[in-house]
Image (cartoon, rainbow, N blue to C red):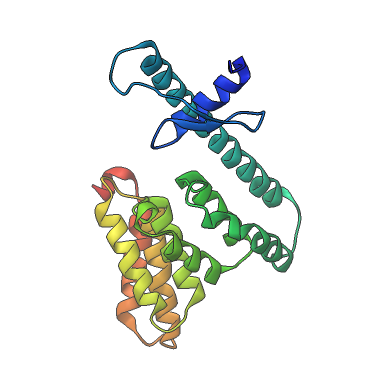
Length: 221
């Protein structure tokens, strides 16, 4: 029997999204086999190409809406007056959504890390950054938050690791980064404090990096 216009559209759309590109089910529940020439240059092939692009565009649009909704929720949470414990509980309820790799972007990750920082959940920051992997860890902002959170968490070895991360990020940057310079100064200051103020080398290094962070750009070149 003849297919309705809606049946044809659904079947073609499903076929365009399918690796095999030929089978779909119409709204009536009947199973249809749509033969679309692959590279034959016929009208069916052109329709297949157009619908395939349309499906991709729709997916990108849907993903952009999901990311925007997530960012709006995190930013609204940041703007609310909450105690750190309350904010940590709110963020914990949102955390599982970031297990979806399609939702993640550098902006999503950095905004979430900012919220974790406000909540003083430094362990959560470290865990999240280590969970997302290398795809986002090359970001200068992510590396800053990673070193910052390691220094604040301060488990055994964390501050040495924080020095390594911040130093590597600064070395990889194509310009002096005041936030990283200041962070190195803070880490060395904390190491000096950890030594009961006995380690003069860490004190000297702290002063060195703090001076660089506060100096004018031409002084840093």
